[in-house]
Amino acid sequence: MREPPRPRFQPDLVRGGDRQALNAAFTLQAKEFDLAFRCPECAYRTAAGQCTVGWPNEALMAEPLEVIGADLIPAFCKAFEPDAP
Image 1 (cartoon, rainbow, N blue to C red):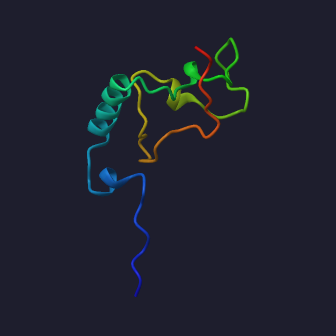
Image 2: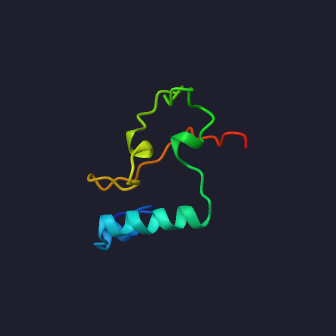
């Protein structure tokens, strides 16, 4: 019998990693590498901070950042486009 496909993006969670520790580590790495991926850094936001393509953005706007939510699904936006510097 074939094994089910292995998750590509959640290996630490599948291995039992602590969600809060993973969020903290990601936050540090995002700062270290100046990673732009949140709504305030996106070209598709209005002046009021709303998403012009309609993505629910609460997870990417929240402080403190929680990329991995309680449902253990990483939050990301497929439409993200960095705003011009």
